[in-house]
Length: 130
Image (cartoon, rainbow, N blue to C red; front, side, top):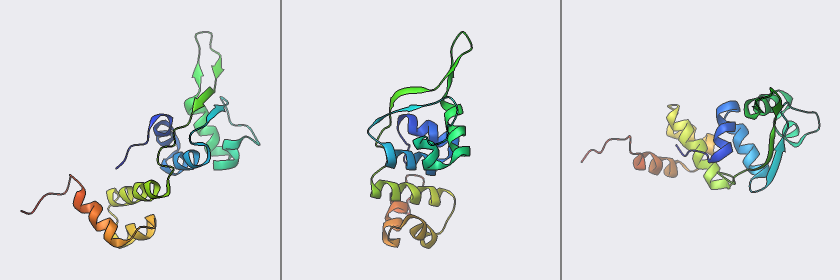
């Protein structure tokens, strides 16, 4: 499976790959500020919902030596897997890792079954017959 770069990997660990991909598609390539706790009408809250945004904000917040909690300031969100094909391949890899069939993986990712078969053939974890 393709790893997400930088802060997208952190967001994926905190809130899941779908949330990280939404952030990449919405704000990839730009600088953002994240509060230490989610706020109503913030772009992240509007994008993923208050509960998930709060989980992300709290997970990325830092506490200084004086015990003050602060959010992220001027953090650049990588473009990551923001392109359509990369996103589809990422979803396909996750579905295959979860044990989904080729047909199910094609439906989940929006890719052709032949593409999924090629992905399986290229996977290093698959043994070679000859």
